[in-house]
Length: 325
Image 1 (cartoon, rainbow, N blue to C red):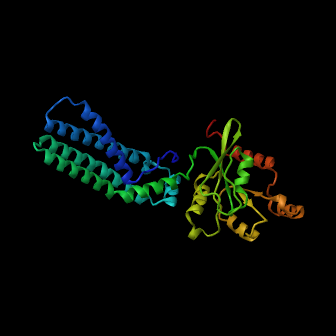
Image 2 (image 1 turned 90 degrees about the vertical axis):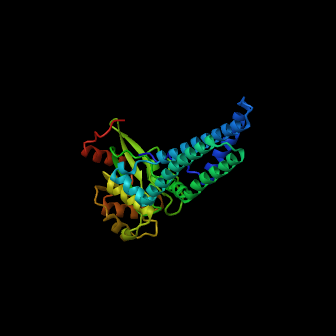
Image 3 (image 1 turned 45 degrees about the horizontal axis):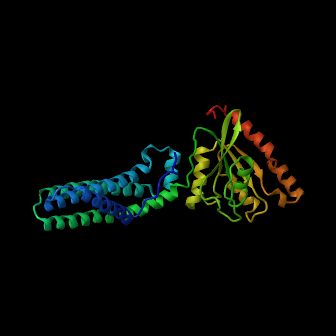
């Protein structure tokens, strides 16, 4: 599922400005092309053309909003739960329903006022119908202003979700915030995640890939999570769901330089119910004695090539034939 290509959802006034401006520009060009000297017929033709342009512009823009968002009923369990974690799924559906309602009423009012103007025999009444039509159309768009704003917020949240191949053998990097998971991803793969020296840098999921026997291994850098699963925020839920639904293997990253105690990190590790291998980060900041003591007690890795070899071994155990490159 690719959420990256959902375009911005503009405000109601923006859609109206585009439609009305386009109607005025094309209406003027249409006026110049008319050959009739009948003022009434000319006025009718111009206003009918403007209504046609406004209707076409707004209905196309509303339709693009509706089709830009995925069919949520067809999402996998992982993506569905991810959407729920980042957004209010019911509110997204309600907001898209409001856009659908607007689209329907744009069509209804455009048809209604086109018919009125077509039958009209008074220039003043045509002018009145024109004002009424513009007012009705503006009212329709203003009534969905909140829905449009919500959908744009939802779009920004959903863009945090990368396009993940759920068929590939998947390794997730898991652990507390700011312990070196993104750095490890950049060393294992060609991924260049945004790495900053403070907690919760990773807001979504960063992806990288390893090649193995002409196939890909998908590695996901999860947002840092704390050991408070009953009160997780959205960022932590992203990490939890990635491990729960996607991970064939978890690399649990320990960091002995951070304020999180070793006991806290071990406690968090216990919530993982997937095959897990350990990696000790930031060893350049530790005494060699402390590194050796940790490795002796926990059978973890510090060597990247050995870590990669272990990943390949685990992938082979899963009969890694899910997808060829």
